[in-house]
Length: 329
Image (cartoon, rainbow, N blue to C red):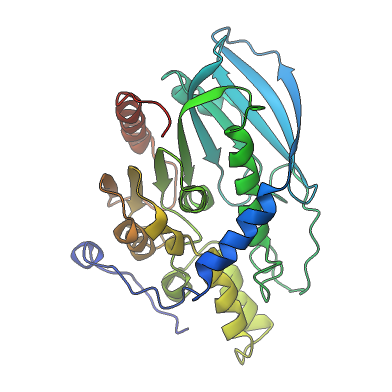
C-alpha cells in the first residue's frame, strides 16, 4: 500500500474497471461453505407490535437470534393489513442502527414493507463472537482481521444470509411479492453483498458503498473507517509483516468481489467529493456488475452525506421495479 492524494477524473472514473487482483481463488467455495452452514440453522424471531400514530402502517419491533445466537435488534414497517406485498431489506451505515419507523415511510408510501436490523455490535445489538487478535484502533474493522473464518464481517455476512433466509421463509411476517435490498455507505456495501451472496433478489440500491475495492480504498481514502486499517499498520505493524494476511481476509469480504454474481437491476450513487468511500471504489463495483439494467447517479458537489435529491431517484427506481409485475422469480 502506498498512500495517495486525490482520485480519478470523471472521464477516468467512467472507464475504471480494475482487475480483481485480490479476489481469493477459493472465494466461491469459501462462501458456498458458509451458506451451507447457515442453511441448517433455524433462526429464532421475537416479535413485538408497537403502537404507532400513523394508522396506515404497522410497526413491529424484532429480535432475530442469528446463526451464533447473537441477538440482532430490528424493525419491521409495513402498510397496514397486508399479508403479501413488495419487501425491501435495508442496511444501515457504519456505527448506525436500524433507525426509526419514520425513516421508512417514503418506501411504505409505495406499498412496500421494510425490514431493517442492526449490524451486530452496532446500534443496540450485541456481538457474541470471540475474536482472536487485539488492536489499539477503535471500531470493528480489525476484529479477527487475520483469519477470514472468524473475521467480523464474515460474521456480518452470515447474519445477512440468516436474515434473508427468514424474510423469504413461510414464517416471515409478509409474503414478499418482490424483494429488494438497499443501503448507503456500509449499508450500500452490504446491499451488494446480500444480492451477490443470496442470488435471488429482484433489485439493489447501493449508495456510495463502503467495504468496496480495498486495494484502492486503502490508498486513497482520507477519512472514515478505511482509516482503521491504515492506522492498524501505523500503530500495530509498521513493517507490514501481516499485510498479506490482512489483504487475504479482506479479499473474502470485499463487496467488489460479489458484483459479478449480481444480474438484477441496480441503482448506485456516488459523490465526487467523497473522501470516505472514494469515487473510484464505487465505479469499480458498478463496472463489475453483470446486470443488464444498471445506472449510477453522479453528484459532483457531494461528499459522504445524506442526499435528498437521490431519495427522489430511489423512489422512481423502486416504482419502476414494482411496475414490472410478475412477482418473485
